Length: 611
Image 1 (spheres, rainbow, N blue to C red):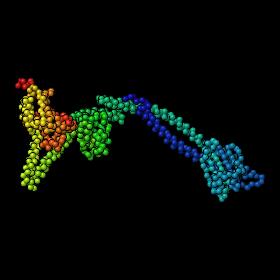
Image 2 (cartoon, rainbow, N blue to C red; image 1 turned 30 degrees about the horizontal axis):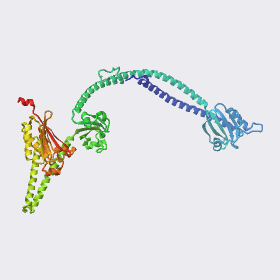
Image 3 (spheres, helix red, strand yellow; image 1 turned 180 degrees about the horizontal axis):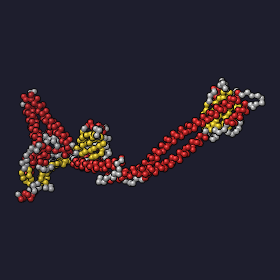
Image 4 (cartoon, rainbow, N blue to C red; image 1 turned 90 degrees about the horizontal axis):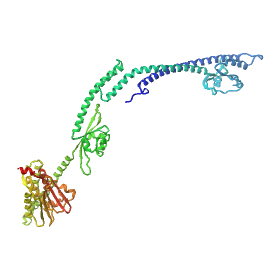
């Protein structure tokens, strides 16, 4: 962290605060003082003008009420003489307007001109004074000097106050008062500048005593930010800053302890999240992803850096099930389908709410697990139950129909009755084979079938099996043997492997066309025995080849039932081969035939020689 400059420091800010407080105090005092002073000066000015105007009005009254002879001076001259003596100092203009004719009989102004004498005036204040005895005044600005003027008019009444003799119009300049206020403002300004200068110097010194311990704490905080809690802050006193230093040192100790505890908990949490088989995704209250462990990244196929800050709804593609992130609280758990074009992927997402210290929702924890295999097994179980029900219902329905026909009287027909009984017997045998196959599969699923393995030379054994089928085969098929010339030994249960070969060869014979060739091969492949049986039958589509080993799966169901198949033979063959630690699969092309392969582990040659 870079060093804080003086113009960015707390020292400057405290100094500015001192100066601003001082300015505020001076401004408050100055505003109050100058306001009061201006008010007092204006009141004194108005009292002075009013007093002089009363004196002038009394003199004009006396002039009006004085009896005059022909040798005496006229009323206008007496009043003009009074006004000339009166119009000095602040009063710039005075006019006396006679009541009878509304004309100016005497005037005075600072320019010493008397051009207004004899003129008639219609000034509103003068009219109000003459007619209504009102004594009004107002403030105005002189258009030439822009000085503030007091402009007004007052009546001159008779001694008995029953009539108005004249009106006095006047204009008084207030610039003297303004000048005094300006001088006082200048004195305040000079005093303010001096006070600010002294305050700034003292403020810097006082602020330094406060900011020095704070700077030391700042340096210590920077050291603490690096994880070093070994150093302490020096405490220079017992005041608030000293107490702050003591508290800072206590904070240092507690942070050191808290960091150790937090680090331990973080390691535990990291270890738990890393070693969980399920994925964990944490979000904030808006649904943005804030945490995700490695299993979750693997399940959704994106790293934490790629999804951080993104919406959980978008990442798990929950738009169809959830409109807002708050809805997941009521859902609890949901199956999310993230299957691709070539690989299915079903995830089970369990949602739980994270609450803060006020028991308010602060986010969500989502635990996701791969349930693809579970869903697949569940689907297969449902299909298995459905297929078993269907396979049993078909022969039972046939038997019921024939038995009902026999009951209704067909048993008396010597030609029809034997055929009906023959069909019923065939369907019964078919159900017996189906039940036997189901029982065998059930035992294999429970690992309840004990294998009685023995060492067998496979080429000779395979030839005997082929010979048995060749003796009973129709003339329409040809057998072709491509067997290894060397002896190949395997560790197998002959009865179980015979069942596998019987099923594969029987299917090859069933689906071979007239004149077709069935090819038998046995050879070695990487310490494995590879056996194959090929026919030249109708074949099957490439997308159905892997499904022929599923239970009850048939490419052509109608033809399979006609030939007496249960749809479980190849499923049993797969279970038997896998129990011998081998593999079984098929290749097929439509119109060209099918080849079924399986492998078995060969007995080690060296071990066999030692024995």
